[in-house]
Image 1 (cartoon, rainbow, N blue to C red):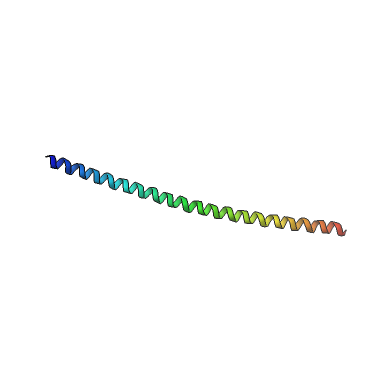
Image 2 (image 1 turned 90 degrees about the vertical axis):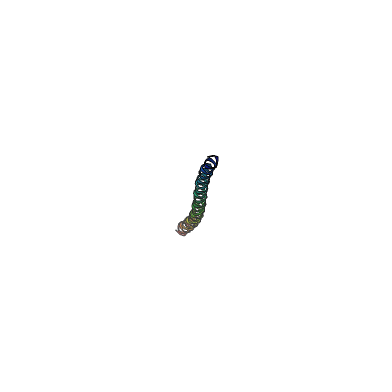
Amino acid sequence: RKGDIIGVNGSIDEVAGEEQEEEVAKEEEMDKKEGQLAKKEGEVAKEAGEVAKEEREVAKEEAKEEEEALLQQ
């Protein structure tokens, strides 16, 4: 009888351990996905910064051309 109880407790512990392992694996997968998402967000932000820089350069060129056109009149 005592051996049966220990056997049941061992099975319960084994199931609980498996559930905990699954939970840890899910958390690790979520962390991995969050890391990938953060990396993509960083890349998008970098690209947006580069686009903004190019837009500023274009605006500077346009302003310079307008100024030159006004001076030539």
